[in-house]
Length: 478
Image (cartoon, rainbow, N blue to C red; front, top):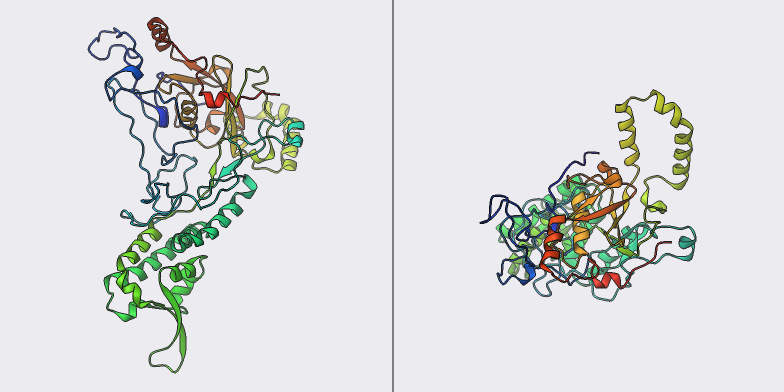
């Protein structure tokens, strides 16, 4: 569905490099449809030649948003340029929720939703990427329990990785875990924790936008007019404060963390008293810090647990196309799924006779929207199978990146074929748009011309295209 023809080797996300010499006809000094003799780019002495990455983890590279556009093969060599990475100046850890406004979010990918205002300047203070401690982690692919194994499940469930702790937790526990992680972060950095609380715990994004804009205006007035005492006081019963700020979770913690204290003061020209937030005198010598706090507040976005791929490698198996999915993969409850299946079975013959093609296509799209996730398997020419979990609305380019990260020689061009041998060409299409939900088995095919050049050059190739650390954890499909 919408998956047409694609030039082999185009666009592979993070790992896409430069096409090796000899992989493109009619290009370069040879021209006229001639091909230069193939050579392994890893042996090229030119510093710009692409180098196969045979080390490192298979997890998506940190600092790359899931909205990164796939790169394409080029006829000239060039370095791979990693995407922007927001880091802490002290420990180099990726900042999970502060200053990430400019990260592109993929089409339903793992990136966080933008929830910030205005462009932020580079900040002096960054949030460390992890809460101190050694949180318990699950293996890359969580092991099936005895009950799950008995049920023949292909994967134990849908899991997410917390950007603050690095812990992998089940879908049902992700929000609770992120909340606990943010609250624990107050012991590390109260300002950063309060900002994360504001952007993450409050679900009404429009209300958050209005609130943080007003809070930022308070801080900006103090920064611009530090000599004016009226700007250093905030009346807590003020209508604007109550309607825009006090109603948001985390805002009071923020004011206290940036240097305000609660005082009961007399109301001018009245014989009554009111509660105020009053900026401490010592903060007048730290006006640049207040400016940084304002910028962090405006540039932040919600902290979201990231979908864990649950990467697995399996030996060749005739059961590769058989899937048994847990309920985590569906929008519907188990009871609703059974009822839908029963009703669909009863009406299938009648519907096929009465529905037009347009009606059938609409119904198919409605069916696809019932799935939040999809379990995909990629079968290599040697029969080994790479498996991962994706959002149903993620793009095909994410699968190409996932496969490339698992390869010893990540520069080798390949293409993926869907069920029936359909080429997955438009990498901007979502899995749901290509009918690859809630599960699918795909086939990897190498670029035949490049493989022929490799064989002709007599280059020694690894026994398996997959990285050794993945093969050491190979499993058997039941």
